[in-house]
Length: 115
Image (cartoon, rainbow, N blue to C red; front, side, top):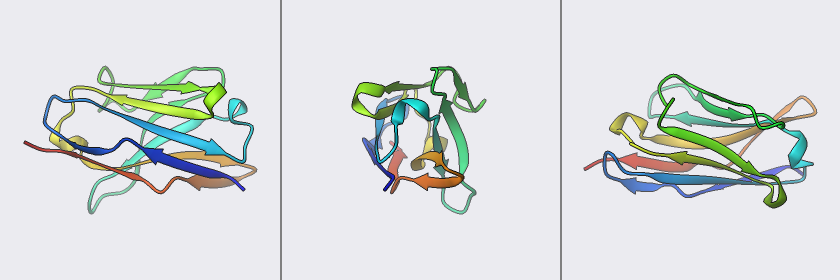
């Protein structure tokens, strides 16, 4: 059974930083790309960052230069380091993998950027 568990969200002031974690189980983690999505109230869920199994990374334009995605395959964990946070980064953040044609999501972690 595939499980993804996010952690690390919270309340932070504009300009601050947070690191999100996504721990996976039930898959051979090293072989999978891991995505980070976010969903703000009243909006669709959008892709923020992706890290491929070989380590290549992609980012949405809105977070380039501020967010860094990484992975530790020994810990079956992906990370999203978020710096220079802005109020518009406020959202629920989800990690995602696709396994055997199915989409698996974590439970989400709330990130709120506010003074």
